[in-house]
Image (cartoon, rainbow, N blue to C red):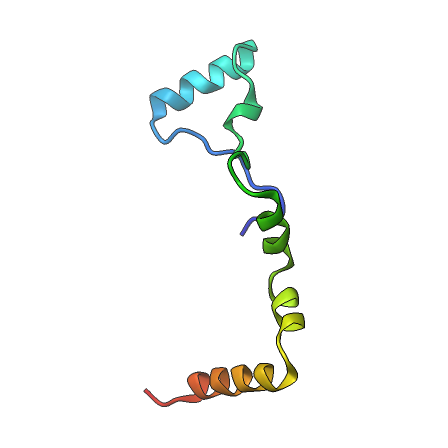
Length: 80
């Protein structure tokens, strides 16, 4: 499983992949354009997304966190 930076997306079609490899080796193509970009995304939303569970836990009260934990434990141990 990849963590941190991920590999660039490559074409699935073998012919397109071959052309991309040749273009990269000759210098006609730039590999950075194959990397996924963040264009069109709100920077504030992206910053909030990186905080994840820590930001959510900080925003919740202790009572609400305990309630969520209790519900999760019941779901985990529920017999099928």
